[in-house]
Amino acid sequence: MLKIAKERLNELYGKIAQTQGLFIPVKKAGEVNYAIWGEGKEVSLETLKTVKSPKNMFFPQTENMMKFKTEGKNIDIIDMRDEKRPYVLFGVKACDYKAIEVLDKVFLADPVDTFYKARREATTIVTLACSRPEESCFCSVFGIDATAPAGDVTVWLDNENLYWQSNTEKGEALTAAVKELFTDGGEAEVEAQKAATKEILQKLPFAALDLSRFKPENLNELFDDPAWEELSEACLGCGTCTFVCPTCQCFDIRDFKTNDGILRYRCWDSCMYSDFTLMAHGNSRTTQMQRYRQRFMHKLVYYPSQNDGLYSCVGCGRCVNKCPQHLNIVKVIKTLGGKNDD
Amino acid sequence: MIEETLIPKVGVVTDIRKDTPDVKTFRVVGTDGKKLFEHMPGQCAMVSVPGVGECMFSITSSPTNQEFMEFSIKKCGCVTEVLHAMEVGQQITVRGPYGRNFPVEEDFKGKDLLFIAGGIGLAPLRSVINYVRHYRENYGKVVIVYGARSADDLVDFEEIKTEWKNEPNFEVYLTIDRPQEGWDDHVGFVPSYVKELGLDSNMTAVLCGPPIMIKFTLQGLLELGFEKSRVYTTLELRMKCGVGKCGRCNVGDKFVCKDGPVFRMDQLDELPDEY
Ligand SMILES: Cc1cc2nc3c(=O)[nH]c(=O)nc-3n(C[C@H](O)[C@H](O)[C@H](O)COP(=O)(O)OP(=O)(O)OC[C@H]3O[C@@H](n4cnc5c(N)ncnc54)[C@H](O)[C@@H]3O)c2cc1C
Ligand code: SF4
Ligand code: SF4
Ligand code: FES
Image (tube, rainbow over all chains, first blue to last red; front, side, top):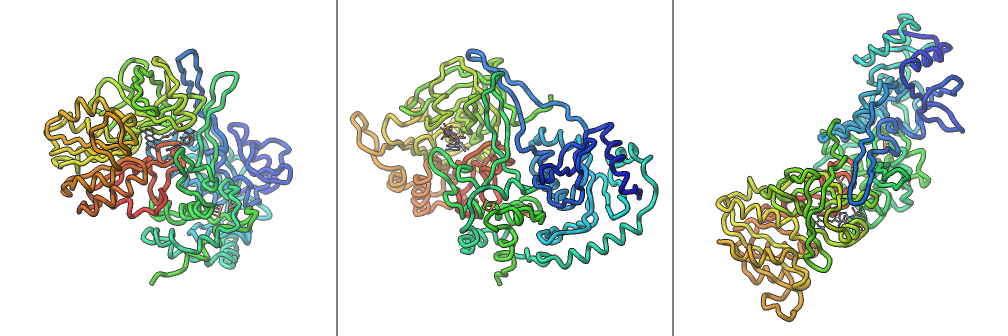
């Protein structure tokens, strides 16, 4: 393990930024989001829930895919995929890192999404262990250890130092590039922090949520549960919960006419919207209850059923904090998760 | 460059046939004059008019056709209107093939086959039927029941009259909703016609058409003694990516684009009722 004094972090960022792009939580206009680092930017590593999750780095809110040039009856397709510059994503929390795993299973499944893959491969991810989990956090319910996230490099931060441990080949390469700034040590401090954080995690208000009923064999029973009506009653269908969610993956593909040809881009979409499933001859989900149910059934039952039990919620708590109607997945789990059918 | 399924190929429309007042069949090849890609019966492709949008259509031609691909397209919205206004020689884009095909090389082999279609539902079936005709010796008797609103709404009527009706061991039953001058075949809805025909319940059945027709025809088949595990259909949900990533066509733990569009009725029973 390596360590560097907290006051010298700017040197570390500068060193990384010499050779590749560095994305890090930065405070701007009162909001913290991952942004490119530069001298004078206000880095806020401690912010647990950036407004946008780091999924934006691999699966951007909008992304240009290709261009069409048309002339008479002819069409020319211009591939807009370019070589991605390597970059470092720094400060990813355990929940958000797990969310990248959830997205990988979608975008890297055959046929591979090459837009996503190119960004993913070009990135070295430095995760940051949590030491001050918040009341809306419930990652541990999904078996995530916030004190020791995976990633190419894992770092821990206390009042004096940042501790650095590389886990992968990519991590080793990054370590080699910055090693001169570090000294050895920190094991004891990290162990102490882990133990202290685990105590806090255990006492969080949502730490004991029961997921036992969310199993593939209960799919239809859960789908038909009358509780969805009441759970979803206040939902506005605004889509906020899907946009802030690090695992929500739904997208739209759209065309836009420019002065220089037709641009085809993709953008985040939301199963909470009424036109998401609208067709010429009807709509398979006509009520907000059905759309609300879709979002949570997908996270807690459908996705795990397709992916060996892996949930597509990581307990980041963003939807808990952001829903204007105070609806969220915690209420769904409390209502439906623990009822046993026997 | 690395292959990317969301980036389509350019296709050229080489023929447009008006089948009914609102259905046209488009013949498409690549810019090199060859078929764009291979497929199996029941698979679909994303066809697009750049600047307007992209839509999923069944590839209605049989894979045994080595020269071109065909799509039978009903006019019902933005993209399909532009397609209908198109002239021969126009380029479009196509990507695919997507989805699971009918089990023509597995469960269908050696079986007597019953095809029931309503309206544009013939599009996916035409591919299977012509495939079966091509490999005739691999399959038993073929019974086709096809209905539409009126005689003018029967898609591919010429092929049905001149080719299917004359195929050995093929029985073709046509029906239209209301009596019409010059029509001396059956009149009535598909579900009731199916019951009247008293079909042999040992056949493997394939059903395609509007949801309401499927629902009532299935009921009829079950009454006749057909087993759900021997009845196939296709689902139609809104689609964008075609490869199980955009989330749009999700029903229960299935993506219709990737795990369908072909499903057996007993498989549909396991899905939540949301399609
Ligand atoms: C697996 C599959 C196979 C299909 N095969 C055929 C076929 O062989 N022949 C045929 O005529 N039609 C077929 N359809 C339906 C066809 O995709 C729609 O009619 C078409 O998308 C309508 O597009 P539009 O832009 O003209 O209509 P609009 O109503 O303007 O479309 C708006 C949006 O809704 C979507 N949409 C509208 N209707 C449907 C629909 N019924 N299904 C899916 N998305 C829809 C469109 O993609 C578009 O993005 C199939 C659909 C699916 C899912
Ligand atoms: S659950 Fe809340 S955040 Fe999500 S769409 Fe409904 S109102 Fe918006
Ligand atoms: S559903 Fe809510 S708590 Fe779960 S990962 Fe998404 S935003 Fe976070
Ligand atoms: S069309 Fe995108 S998931 Fe099926």
